Image (cartoon, rainbow, N blue to C red):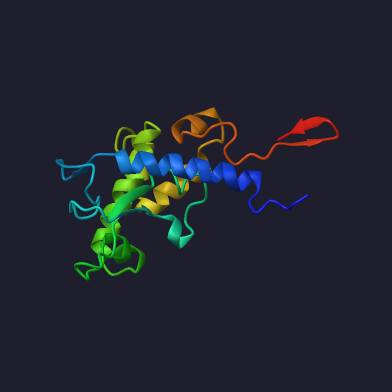
Amino acid sequence: MAIPKRSAKNIAWQAYKMRERLEVMKRPVFIDGLPYGTHACEGCGKQTDYLQVAHIFARRQIVGEPWASSRYLTMKLCFYNPFEDKIGCHEKIDGYKDKALRERLEERAASRLLAAFGIVIGSDLWNTLLGTMTPDGRVRWMESHVSRDTEIRDVLHLRPTDGVVREKKHGVQSS
């Protein structure tokens, strides 16, 4: 019997990530309230076919899965275009070349995640305190304080099989 190259858990996570990437790529882009369409970079608004899904927080090991790959904490960003010989927004934030852009995208991603859970900054005292945190602080707070239950599965669009390995051991199915 051949040894599988990828585990069942890995395959399940890849399916989840692919679904989330597709949702990000279909998402219309609005910057400062202005519509830019679906083929635009969420960083600069440029219309281009050179778009990648970027993890806004995960590259610095701030957020774990499934949060890091969720549609709320990823954005479609332009990247290096060989015809223009210019770096894109993805390289700018990954290489810390544009601090203002990185901070703006982190703020937008953190706000998007909080909104998905129905949290509005400033709606009460606790949410006002949450508003004083940095964007990555708010995301870390969400990850550590929200209980791991069906609400998380619903908000992050997880399926029961995502990231779960089910093997039959002695005729009993375990998870």
